[in-house]
Image (cartoon, rainbow, N blue to C red; front, side):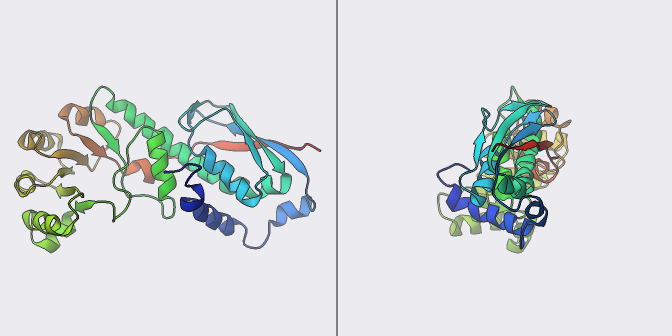
Length: 285
């Protein structure tokens, strides 16, 4: 999803737009104190414990401003980091280091925060086959970064966008005239390689989805007791996904029920950032 091979194709446009948002004309503060090029270095410091994600994106922001900027680090995405830890050092034109600082940190802090939060929930599911999924409840223009961060934290990606799979939610079902009708219409229209997922809210809808041949049945906002009964009714004839009111405290019970997947919008819409800073900037020439 995010790697050196596809960076220019999939990611650079997002980063350039973020830089344009922050530098509409010039960096007045930097140009006032550093009118001429001068080489320098600055340390990347972690200010709380967590899981790092987005190191390559962080570096890429600076190299889009100047390809000569170097980032020295022994860390990789997915590594645990500790409060006060030196994560790496940037070296390059001081003007570039100053102008790219906020944009680069915004990505790194956001992605690391999501990876950290995701990892804390994944640990609650250890010992089971239930997999934690994200959703499309992402920040506009941040989806590739946020969904990547979920995978770094140990979670899995649900569909990436509307072209990625068939998910028949309540309004699709209402438009089609019912669960069975929606599944039949999707089966007739969608390519055969596409799985069909149906959102259900009660046991009657579960039975309709099952009899219509849905591949995945989402158990949406069900009580634990109803969800347990739904899983028993399905009996492995379709994959099951729990969705709605998913909290860290509830994951233990969900794990015991034995659904195949549990999706959680909070992974991307509510994860706090991880506090990371650039400090100790100094000239090297």
